[in-house]
Length: 474
Image (cartoon, rainbow, N blue to C red; front, side, top):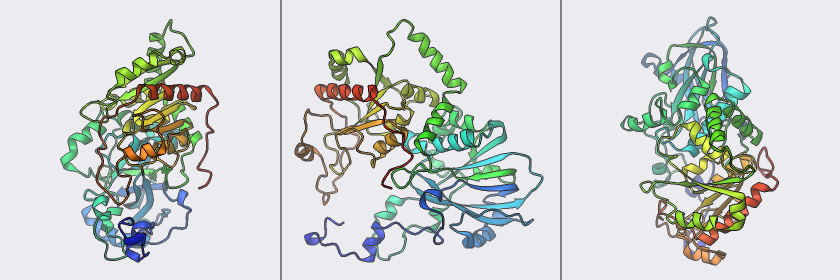
């Protein structure tokens, strides 16, 4: 919109500012600093919870307006109270939860963890690490809650929420255009027509099954299924991992503590023992480079991977120091721990930008992630062709949070200049919004692949990057 304005002039009128500026929260200002607003928020002392009960709904919704935007600390009064708890944060925004509570001093010693989830029907590791990591850290590592004493209730975006439609709508007033209800979490599955995808993600053999089993000995379910139950402690929301927006509550050392915890579990130890047995007699001390290869149906395939691997194996430096392997099937129903193990036992991963790179946090401290982008990807898509500089980008930022080296490259040629990249990249003119082919397959120049592998090997055999708590200039 800015680029289309005549002569580059863009009067800063309210409708335009509304699109550029951070919107105020629902219900007014919040006193807590940005990085501390997202929770977790807690109710203690014993409560019976009510969520979405028809008899209580209208009164709850009316009473909740006065509490909106507050991380309200529950004080028992002996009767049903309608609270609006929040904000709680996911990777795409801040939300609030309407919850009815009634004091119950006789509630047994049990904790209910209410976890907000967005894109719940999509088994995408990058989106879901935003609750995997803080849930494991806060509930198991920090609070040391036992699975047998914990229930997990899931909450979701409003079923009709569609911010893409909202933000592209014509702006006529300087108010938020999306309905207020979109800011409130649902306690039921949001899209009944996607239940097959929910089962793939949340079923007994789904992607999240093992994470949920580490949190609770009972089946996790939407919040509405816990209606009427009593708990001595209710935890709403999790520490935020939104490292591209603010100081994350999850620091590098906390991510490391999650990895230590995962690697202490029986499932991981069994996989580690199998790998140790399979490596018997092999030379020790070699690093492992793993290519993450997608399926043709998914797109973004490394189209000449055989040639690339052959070129690497022919290189003396690489063949002496690296074992090269290809990981296939991450998106085809591998259990969570098997996916984690595949990355954890790599020192370097090479992948097209996408969901699989969301696993880079599982690399060893000082590991390296090579992110590949197509020749026609937009020039405004941050991809600097340099190590450890793209930390404001989603995967570069995640690498920084995890203490991992990162580089993003367009690998279709050798010794690309900035001008050559701009000439090849689509959408380099911001006034042209012609969609680019995001899922196009990628050609990797074999010589460029060898260069990157040699650079990555130097990175992982050198000193690891610092394990920083947050961005230094935030």
